Each structure stands twice: as C-alpha cells, then as structure tokens.
Length: 433
Image (cartoon, rainbow, N blue to C red; front, side, top):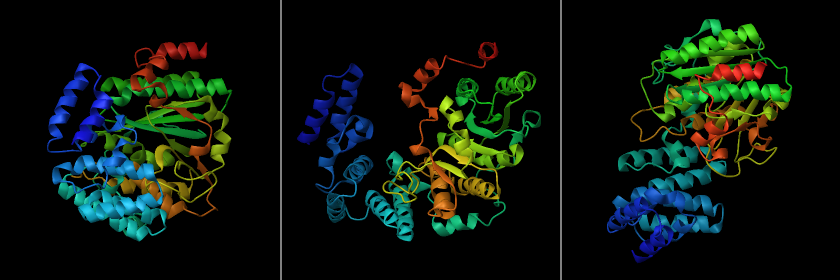
C-alpha cells in the first residue's frame, strides 16, 4: 500500500486542486483496490505499472485496474523471456483470467497458431463479460473478434439474414452522385461530428490545388441521424461543384440510426463502402472524418491506384506480409483503400458483413470492430499472397493529418481555419479566385 501511495504522490502531489481531489479519492480507494489509480490515471504513468504486475494475488475488485496494468506491461516487455516468466507467475497467482487469455492469444497469433488464438480470445471475451471487466483499449478487439470458421461463412453469403446493423434504410442522394472520378474518399459521422466535414472537404480541395493535380476526385459522406441544414449544405455544395468545378464531386447518403455510440459511427464508412464502389465505379479510400488530406496524397495518387488495396499495417515491417507484434486487429481502419474490381467489392462486402455480424450492443464495448473486420479480411483474403498488390500506408510519406498532430480536435479545427458550413462559401470563393 505504501509503495502505491508513494508513486501516486510523487506523480501528482503538486498538481491542481482538481487533481488533488482525485488523488484523495484514489487514496481512499486504494484501501480496498490497490489498482484503482491505474483506472483513472494510467496514461500518466510511464512504466511504473510493471512493478505491480504478478507480485501477489489480486482481489475481484482489483480486476479492472489490473487488466489495464497487465496489458501495458506486456506491451512494454515485448517478446522477451521476461514476458513468458511474468505470464507463468501470474497464472500461478491468479489462475485463468481475462488478461492472461488475451496475452496467450497474442502469442499464439504471432506464432501462426491462429486456431488457438481464436479460442483464447473467445475465452477472454466470455470471462470479461462474466466479470464485467473491459479490456484495455488496444485489446478491446476480443469482444468482436470472429473465429476463422465464423468469418469464412461471411465470404459466401450474398446477404445476411436480419443483420444487427442493416443498410436497407440507407438513403442515397442520387443527384449528388456521379461516375467518372479516379478515386472517392469515404467518410462517415453522426450529426455532432459533422462539424469536421467542412474541414475535411476543404483539405481535399486545397490539397488538390496545391499539388497541381488534375485528378477527378469525389467525396462521399454518410451521416447517421443528420440535421436538415447539414443535408442542405451538401446538396448546395454538390450543385456548386457541378457548375464551377465539375472535376470535383461531393455525394452523400444518410440513415436513421438505432445505435448512438462511437464504435457504430466509425463503422459507417465500411457499411456504405460496397455501395459506394458500385455507384461511383472507382477505387475508394475510407478515412477518418476528423482528418485532413495533404498535397502529398495527390502526388502519390498514381502509386495508390497501382495497388489493389492500401492498409495501414503498422505492426508489419516494410515490404513484409508477416506481422511482427501486436494483435490480429492491429491494422488501422484509417485509411483503407479498395480498388473497384470484383476482388475489391468482395473485400468491401466482407468488411460490411463482418461489422453487421459482430456488432452487439450487449457487449461491454464494440470498440475496434472496424479493425477486427480489416484484420480478419487481411488474414483470409490477402495474407502472404504476393500476387495481390498491397500498399502499406504505415511506410508511405504522410498523406493526411490528424487531430493528434495539433494537440487535440479543437486545435485541429482552429489550425485548419475554423471552416464551417456557415463560412464554407468564403473558402470556395478564395479558392477559385
């Protein structure tokens, strides 16, 4: 107990009044939950948590904080002998657990024993649900990870019977959608995150102009539960582009969404992706709505178009198809490029069906579900097949900017000129003059 208090005081003892208050609450909680501090302050700790893992048996109330602690420790240790020694000692102390099953699943996956990994992840999910323990954020994929046999069934299904996330209620604005583009950006959001749409659109228009590109480009935006003025903005912009800049297209679709949570909104771009490929007839790249395209993207467009797929496989070495660390879903959802072909449409349809099948509002979290879909699609459809042309965005000069590059979402919008639906016409006037 004293070592915990010492660590906490050393880190936060001179903080603000609000932090002192949290510290007092945490100190009181430490009487019954020694790992409570890691539940609320874990990002402030470097590797301090390593000393608190596998040193003695934990209690049920400590499971949540210990799960976070354990995940951070194994990520820090990596594939060292100490990793295995820690797993063995923890198993001897605490028996089968969520955190131990996740860790062994990762080892099996990277070792090529994917069947054992699937079993470990499913066991971890079931136990997490029984215990009410939410995994650390990069381990949340256990909740929506489908086994290989479950996923393979999705490859042969034309449609899904009563999917959890239907797309039958998606409404496409036919007038705004046109063929002839070389590539279409696909973004998705709810009405609240729509405030990032003008910034994204401006980045595409500005970066295309700065790069000197003459490429025909489309942006497709899908909105869940949109407000009327947001749809009006997109309709007016689409009409303006048809008159003033026909080489640029903005199209959109929308739906009334039952589920209102971040994990669902991140999946909208993949739920709509197959239909976007069919309607636009060109390669599509799904990106975060709160991102900005750089001129480098347009300078790299021909390189991108020469590949069948583009994925941000950040745990894969350059020019390698073999993952060297992380989880099977450690392939970023942003950005994801899919060519317009039978192969590309099959890949996009698999992502859609995976999300529709795996999403479950009763789970503790659906976070990482889009990455799970991509990770499983890569495993089943790309893998080590070198005949498939794959571009790894993790090893390409930055094609985009994210809020983290500027210190946060508000700073991102401000840096980009605070462009909104209200002043977007001013941006267009300045861009075209």
